[in-house]
Amino acid sequence: MTRALPPTCDADRLEAELQFLPMADRDDAVQESWLAYLAGLDPIRALKGFARRERRWRRRNVLLNRPDLVRAT
Image (cartoon, rainbow, N blue to C red; front, side, top):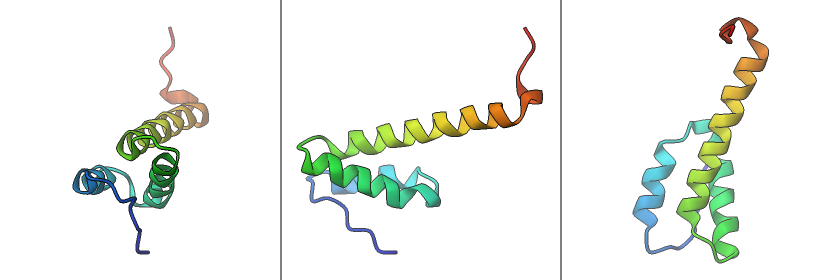
């Protein structure tokens, strides 16, 4: 799918940050960056925040679904 990125002066940086995301999350990340752009916020910062939230969510779900991975204290 062709993604249209928000028109920012850092379009190359935005595209570079997008490469660090898994393929499945890229469309959602572009939507997040558009929402930030339309709200007057930094699209790159929104993209990084989205990536951080997704990583935390995945890490949390892996630990919830696999109790054998949690260390006993």
